[in-house]
Image: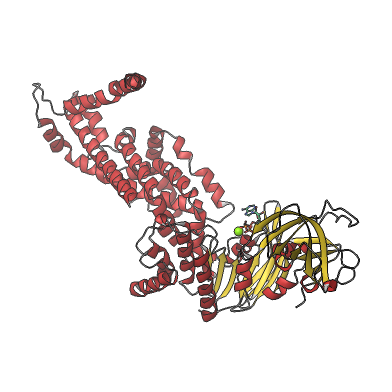
Amino acid sequence: MGTEALSLEEVSIRLGQSLILDGISLQVPAGSFTCLLGPSGCGKTTLLRAIAGFAPLSAGDITVGGRSISNLAPEARQTAMVFQSYALWPHMTVAGNLTYPLKLRGLSKVERDRRAEAILSLLGLEGYGPRAVISLSGGQRQRVALGRALIIDPPLLLLDEPLSNLDASIRRSLRGELRRLQQKVGITTIMVTHDQDEALAMADRIVLMRQGRIVQVASPEALYSAPADLEVAHFLGVDNVVDLRPGDPVAAGGALAGFRTADARVFTGEAPAGLDAVLVRAGTVTACAYAGGSYHVSIDLSDQAGNESLSGASGAALSALSSVPVAPGTRARLSVPAPMLMSFGADSRLLQGIRQ
Amino acid sequence: MWPGVLLIAPALTAIALLYALPLLRSLITAFVGEDGHPTLGNLAKALEFYGADIVYSILVALGSLALIAFVSIAIAGYLTLGQSRWAVPLLRWIYRWPLFIPFIVAGQTARSFLARNGVLNTLLTDVGLVDAATATSLLDWRGLVLTFAWKQIPFVTLLLAGAMASLDRSTIEAARNLGAGRLRCLIEIVLPQVRPQLLVALVLSLVTIMSVLSVPVMLISGNPTMMTAMMAHRVTFYGDYAVANALGLFSYLLTAVAAWAYLRMSLREKSN
Ligand SMILES: Nc1ncnc2c1ncn2[C@@H]1O[C@H](COP(=O)(O)OP(=O)(O)OP(=O)(O)O)[C@@H](O)[C@H]1O
Ligand SMILES: [Mg+2]
């Protein structure tokens, strides 16, 4: 089956009183890998269900390869979806689950078994074919669910958190496999994930959603360095926000600055030389925890002595890395290189992203 | 131990006196001759006189069950997979009505509906499907099958639709997503998951069919007829409890075989 471009135009979905999706427009190029990212309950699953045909649109249109599929039954849409709850068929074996879609397509028994073997070894489940699915662990079930969708080489693959229950090493290897397979066959793929590393590593494009709307569509690099607003930034690991003061090394007009903990350093003694292009804040260390390779230090700015004024609502607590442990209670200073700062306006929209 | 026994003693006594004892007595009577000695004569007599009725009962029961299963699966399947905004609620509301109608009323209604000049034939003649001269009465095995089915379909559908409604809905969606139409989905995904409930409902229906007296008495004149009618006949006309009980033994056997088959199947399902 060939791969197809997908296009959503002003798609809205209303369930009961609430508007679950609100005017979603999105172009997904053929053969691309798109990740949907967003807080729980923002409508990611609903969006996939709308594409698969399980959530009737209250407005808008969905087209695949230029043809509208909005009025097609789910079975006629040629999508393959991996459900968040796996949705395996409990009355069939693992092999039965994997081969049923092939049976529906009229493939011979020999061919079905051959493909099931291939997919089982791809998923690291050799020899599990005759097992009952109810006897599998959560992660094994999740892999069977993924295999069941991949086995038909669908033109459009919809994945709802397909790797969420796997241990770190299987997840890494399946990430690679999935991406490799997707690129080889050129399946147009949309994947929901809660894991920003996963999204950054796998996606061609990331779609950030919030409360049933799309907030930002960008490449992983662009999203990482220039999130549209503070909330998106927070979602992408920008866990420190400070109020800006005169003299801080950022573009004029900014009200807030955000940075990632990994980009900030803590020092207790004299300020190192060449501090002109650095944002500095002083405070009291409240916690220090080993974070593999360095120490994760939390600093509280709110109880400041001397003439350093208190930060506003944001920035009372910051965190940074230190190469040596720092005892709680110590006075310390935190510094962030100017290029790693993102500045936001008073409306919390981005003014200036990371410069590299 | 004794306090426990004391606690269940009333229930045990009631079961023993009201169920076990009469059942045992009727079973024993089937093997006791007029002279008070044990004999197989009653069984032989029952087979000789009523062999045709036993076969007839089995065939009518199987026919009814087949029709009940087919229609119940269709209705419950439509209630589960149907998408019409008005047809599904309407069907859900209407299908249970026969549950509240007693068998004797159902029998009486069937009589006037299925007779040679009954409502059905009148309708068919009016439409032109049947010629008035050649219209036949449906008050034979067909009437029995139709009446039993009409009465039991709501019951089986009720259990089946309940079981289907509690299935994990996403298993149905996954099948449709991967290309299964609604009919295939019903047969290959939904039905296998509710098979135990379907079997229970059918076994219970079999027991009901084998014990209803009013319907065969009202619909069937002459022979062969259902075993229940013949048992009643044997008792009311001849006062012959021995042969009636021997006949009853065959009903027990039939329902016992069905129950055993069901239990075996559910045990096998549990073991794998
Ligand atoms: N059948 C329904 N009726 C009413 N509201 C619903 C229904 N299904 C989902 N919702 C609501 O729609 C919103 C979006 O749900 P959805 O499952 O798409 O979220 P999600 O982004 O996938 O979240 P998560 O990351 O937790 O899986 C939620 O607020 C949810 O409560
Ligand atoms: Mg979800």
